Image (cartoon, rainbow, N blue to C red):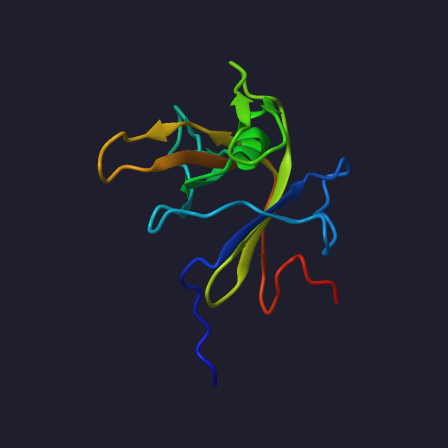
Length: 171
């Protein structure tokens, strides 16, 4: 019997979210999120809101649990201008690589994406509707590089798929 385990990170794919809330079809619409800095990616649920209702006249107690907000925290490593414009918005000026510039807006544009996280081994984890919230972090030192820490907030149900190939591969 094979041992099934999910470990490592191979790639993260994103695609524009569908208006009907479904996961986009496999194929060429999926994009590589970018290079993820080693050991920075984690998917986790925040603590849900918990409300306890207690009776004054008996031992009856009702506990209501709110939604489980799920997010992915990671850092993109050394992104190019195209990736910066994809996640922060803004305009790339010029066409010749090495002579272009990018103007970052003060406010992030509202964009909804779908995501699939591909591990080295194991099952994929995805969500049909997420928000990508990037931040700049550049260390100007002999060992510093440009990182873009980002949070990917799930806005729909978490999905998993065993035996899936990359979402760019149609069956």
